[in-house]
Length: 540
Image (cartoon, rainbow, N blue to C red):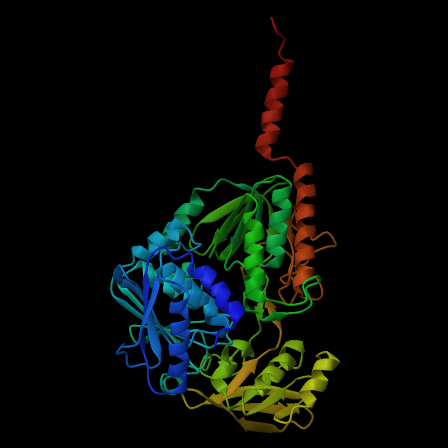
């Protein structure tokens, strides 16, 4: 199951174990159980600190727990095989159970340990889901640090009947004490924030203690990270306030046009951005959603950003990099059936529709790529495009056209998503040439129709926005407000690309630098004036 190279790597990782751990499996007579036995036997053979037994009595088979030999309350359960994107999660679970310290702050660990009340989590993932590992690892970390928290991590493909019975149509999906609790990608900080009722107040108190920055970057995607690195290198006190560090890159799968890197994936790039930012004296404030901008009243004064928790931060210069999000269809049924057949991530949720009929809405690169990927998994794909032709690169269009289980409809306007109250069962679209409405019976709808700028919080700030909500900037990334700059997908810059966002963030930082050195802070001017006055007083 594990090749020689992977075994060697795993053996090196297991050498980091500080105390013994136990693997206890509950197996059946099926092929997956045989594979689980083989995997656990291999792991145990690579370290004298790991033992594997196969006498577990859990109802889910195959499944296994990883527990600390010295503390039976520190454990986590995997149901199914955590391979693919989740192999890293398995390795981390082994290391953390064995006492190897996780790369999170002491503050996060203390927050996990302080959670009160019994909590039983069940989390469903797919092996192709690039958003799932963060949730798997976060729940694992919490379970291993709090004996009142039990976590079972379930590979949906192995337990397909259970997935369908519970109505799971999008992953990651998290149940708490038997009830649906959350879906989508979440960090350990986000999960703890949802569980800890006092988290917002604590975060607000921490922000209130911070002194004004010379540069505050609002948004933590590629543009924001680049801007912060550039201003920090200039010696300015720099902060990043982000709703989610990494931004939409976290939701991106394959990246093949990041020059000098032939292939990477969004989460890997986001992690690299975080590592690079950490090399500098940059104050990163994650999970902070901006709600209001109060511009400075005069040049060189302080701009103020108010956040959802009620706290605010001030800075002499702002760089706004809040990015964009996937655009919704805005038709009846979309919101009602979100995560019940309506999905936005084909990589994450595609395996849950194996053998079924789905539609992809959107004929750009993202839509056609999604249709190609899904055609290799599902029974049939219908691509719906509003325009008269597909707008994707020709190489992608040609590949899609060659696939036998794909139908393509152009000049087609999606008008409704229908369902039975529990899940999607049809999509209605209008032929724009004839006006005729048609219904397609299906089980899933994947929406891929572009982006919406995250700029709603700026509408009453005096900042100039386009009709689409993009921040208007000039060729130096300056907005109409002195000292306020912007970069990336939230702006009017054409071509929403990662590499362009990074360049625009760097440009905005250099423009902020130029602004700051030409506009001294009021207190600096006052101090300079006082010093000049003292020098002017005759001595003696």
